[in-house]
Length: 450
Image (cartoon, rainbow, N blue to C red; front, top):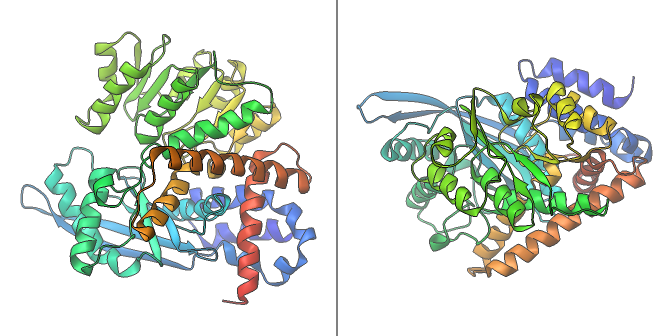
């Protein structure tokens, strides 16, 4: 039995009840098999074993008071996974589904994603099972302050720099940073995703969505194509989906779908700039449901179904941008996507395709941009935000966007170069995993046994 196979089985035994973490580890480790023979020094130093074990896992109680004066209790998490190449960096997720296994899978993925950006950032992730949906601004503020009362002791500008994720946007980052600043009495670069007025960066809200489109553009270019005339399916309707749609429109493509947890809207005429502005107001300001889109514009609403369920029902697409949540695409979805014309998938969400779906892409010559490469634009601009905070200086929109495009081009090249070097030419998944791993592994080796 190989080192890799043994480790995958050990992870399942040692971390029971964490299927998402098992899935993430299996996906990464199995693609690292070619590195075992080429790097016996990694095997000897047990780098593979060490990289799947978090540096530390922090779980804490979050008591807060709702608008009725009743005490509520949630659970908070921060997993600091690996800081071999820089401070821990990764978002905070607020969603009822949050548990330790999900935070560990996200933190593990973040190690390699951050390494691919070429910026000095380690991997971490955090969050809570608190649900901001339906809560008043005051309730969200009280929760965020209670959450930060514990989290503050574990983070710092040179230690761990959280950001946003599902359920954590500008409002939540404001409440979290405001309380951190109050109790630490310092103005420092400890959270990213801030508003411009108090240390944020231009292009940060757009970065994950823009980045996934830039990565897709690089993949399309390998086949002599661009976005002009392509029909694209986007899932989700939050930050990533919104700016993915915006950039596809700008590059000449047509987005025909968006979704939320209640259902999916399909507008085959295309979700243009005016319609997207409505969606942004609906989701970012009034916090309504995507169904309201069809009350204002033409199109259909499919209740209780994901975008990929609708594709399975016969919707024709050229490109797919899963931008909602983990494991939203299964094997049946992937087969339907291929059958209905999809030849390019660029992941805006974290691990949105399960392992069986990925095999379908790879078996049908689909251009597949895995999340750790395709959606790295968000954390890349977070890294640029950290640099600006350190300098006490703002870069122009053009500067940040040019840096983002450069980083996504570089990630694309790293993926292809590593895939070819290790015998899997054109395999973006293998290339992304190996390129990210090698960088972190070499740093770990240099430090000795720590």
